[in-house]
Length: 472
Ligand SMILES: Nc1ncnc2c1ncn2[C@@H]1O[C@H](COP(=O)(O)OP(=O)(O)O)[C@@H](O)[C@H]1O
Ligand SMILES: [Mg+2]
Image (cartoon, rainbow, N blue to C red; front, top):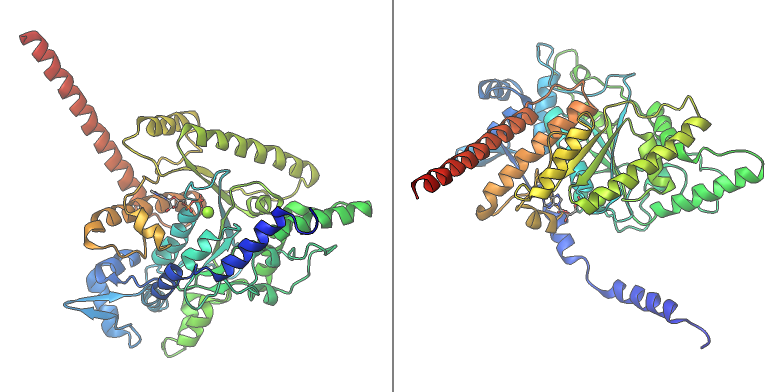
């Protein structure tokens, strides 16, 4: 056979077909309705850790306090309005409480990576939930880096303003200066050029470096850059390209504004200064990893202060954890030999159990085993398998933005509580300078109560059986 092989024919035909297939339908609906969730006054008070009376007082005193949306006797607020209320409270000279946990000028930028060797372990959802929680509960400006060609977390943050399908959109490979496989050296971008790669999302102060297939170019580029250097008898630190890029960007685009700078000398709130401050920098970066250990993925882990390994508890999934951690261990020992002064992440890393089926003895047994073997490295709080998920996931919506139909209200609410507990725990590991909200402790207390209940039931059943045997 001459000319085109069936292999080429297959991919050529499919490429044509996929251009015609309508992959946009569900996507468009989601993009239009992204973050339509609104929060009640009670929820706003919980985010700000204040009572309703204080919220009322602020509403009366602050001319820029958002109206919210009235529905009956309730008033509800969007995430943007929650952030504005927070900024109004945080910038008051008389404020004794801390409302805003923005980085001060000179404070370091924390980087958190969520990874694992396996797909489908809830990495992307865990990362999206953590980002949104930090926004809602602490007012942090969060940078989300999507390091996955599948771009799942990008879909969780996309709306109709952010066109992920635009072929010219830049991503992590560009941010690293490693988007061109033919280049001999990383592209030298200015901090301002790097800053332009961050895309706005519908969440206030949250920006995204989108994922997509272009990330794979970085592997190729890093490989050829290493080769080029080697041919000149030099070495190329391919493992720290992202780390160096983040440092460079942060150096040029670090925090400048403090909440108290948001008011003029007469005490008037400066809306423009507030809007600018929301995007002048980020306070924390969350990297959503791809389930593999390529050059690029190692770059994400090496750049992180804190690594969270999201891991399901099935036996065969756990074997991928073994491979993952031993590979990283071996790889980092090469890095430390080569570059002894490199600051590898020094925060409190952890394995987070995900999609745990509580009715499944094996899941629970694996989790207990892991916790017994490595109590300091395995989170005692975990994500349970949720019934609310199928509908949420279909729309690429997180627990914090999903608005359930009546029939799913209860399961959606318990998934939010589960997400709060996990996030509160992850904050204590990754960002211990933030005050805990107590959700993790509540989770542990509930678990203990349930365990006692189960034990009592078991004992009662045993006693009943024994009585029956004695009598019969
Ligand atoms: N707690 C959970 N309960 C049930 N399904 C879940 C849960 N967390 C995630 N999922 C589902 O599992 C799939 C994989 O989740 P995702 O976050 O994309 O994982 P990863 O990034 O590790 O590939 C998605 O369909 C998601 O909706
Ligand atoms: Mg993912």
